[in-house]
Length: 181
Image 1 (tube, rainbow, N blue to C red):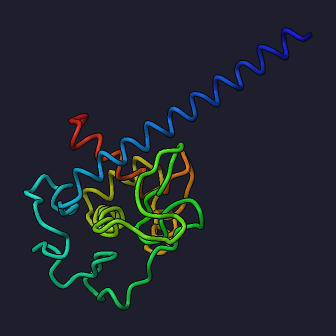
Image 2 (cartoon, rainbow, N blue to C red):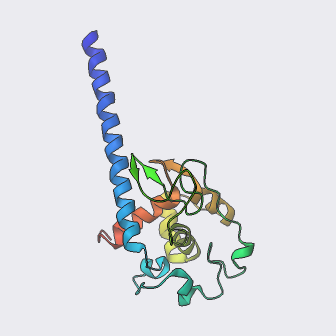
Image 3 (tube, rainbow, N blue to C red):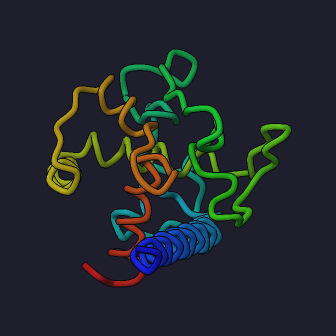
């Protein structure tokens, strides 16, 4: 009987180690991704266009909200995603710490790195507003959303203690930068 309990405990310990390694690997992938996207426009990056400019300087963004990319309103009238407490940075939606690895900002003061705010949200909104990318997004996550539902889903946390928006970024990062397309 003691042997059965011990082997069950060993499996639990091994699973916990695997989960921790997975969180650390995800954190390191996020740090690498953000370092490379730091001075790049995510809208141009996702479309394989020269992206050596900020989102606010992008030609495609003219007349669009910088938060959700809607051409019908400006940033001041935008309904922003509300990120859950403790799961991520309330400004950009990226984790500040994951698996013991510091990713960005200062959790105690709510500080966010320069340029992080215009990465995850605008990338997700671009994909949702573009028919070609929207079909891929909906197929990958097996969902279809209205605008309000998408905003809530993007800010939600389902796996690995990261927002769904970060999951979208990591998936596309792997396809575009690593070449798994």
